[in-house]
Length: 293
Ligand SMILES: [Zn+2]
Image (cartoon, rainbow, N blue to C red; front, side):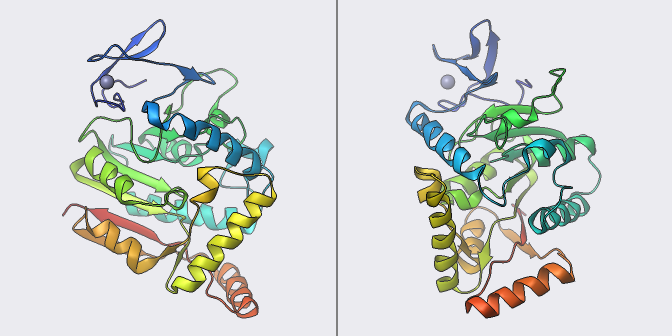
């Protein structure tokens, strides 16, 4: 663990390693581990772990879930969703440019596939997620030999267990849409980023039309509930309206740019046909690039 970056989620102080786990250097507080990962949550966030477990068990049954025996190959696996995610990764890599020793925090990292791919390109990555699940959560990044390719910790979107001004890049990859109010999440990105840092959001479903956003969001929630999901991660799942998300980003970042990666003719064509048949606008998956300017 890179203790120059990780911090106590309660008071923001530095952490130290003890035989019992990570300890806040300012309080008499030791953080337990789950699946070998430190649980860096505020006490009031502990119930979220149960919700994350319920969501993980439903998500595993979903048709868009990562294939369990191919986690190491993500996002380069079969399926239109993963082909789209692979293109979003390629677009992100182009936007990021050379690693140059930069630190990236990946919040709501799921299996950690993005952190793995960015680590391979020389970035120093810190993955945070509520789930330690070995198929869809951070436990999926365990390696047979136990070596750490990137740092991992259990943490919440609302409170990132990181010091102020400590990373160059913050990324929410397909995670912002699991939260009802993105304001505190965007504020956390602004807090942990250095002055010239950049915040990227990607792979969130975004609509122009608010009715389509509500309808698509209900459809997805109903699907997860049918698969046995319950709790806040399911209840809070939503699709975004572009203008609202952009306004929320602008509250903390003076420069906000929308970039729409080329997801390919096939992806666009299938979406257009589906949109026509369903009589609604289907989501787009833009990358937002936000900086303090
Ligand atoms: Zn503390």
